[in-house]
Image 1 (cartoon, rainbow, N blue to C red):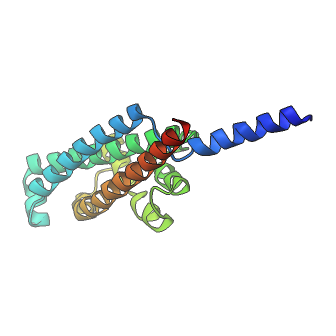
Image 2 (cartoon, rainbow, N blue to C red; image 1 turned 135 degrees about the vertical axis):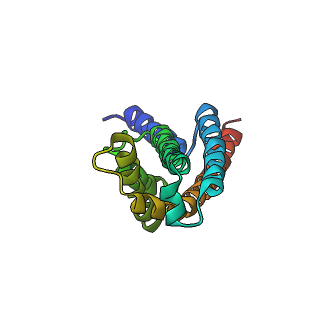
Image 3 (cartoon, rainbow, N blue to C red; image 1 turned 180 degrees about the horizontal axis):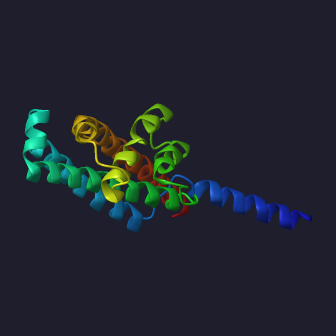
Length: 176
């Protein structure tokens, strides 16, 4: 390999490295729109949350609303995960669970949090596909976890977007 080829490869590697941890404006806007919806759904879930399991199972409209909100919250997070993974040049996650685990690689959140939130995809799958009779107790018990985990999820995503925006601005300033 001659000097010119070596210089070209080094330049390409520097450009690739500079593009890591950046996000396009379109992707950032898409994530922000989904975060707004996620915040709305979390608030609705808080509003619909019955004060007891007995009230949960005795009010079908509340039960169905909670189930749907859980699904929508998790689906939005999965969309956000895939936008971030794609924006970082990653391959699509092998499954919903791993979309959370894959975000550890991009410093969106730590492994401990990823391991806690990733199993929520199982509840989503049961609700959507009715793989088995839906266990009302499991769904009811997941309400508080969902509110807590996805509130933290949003904070992590917002922090990540701020970080990659700062990096993008620094790169653009150096180019300009």
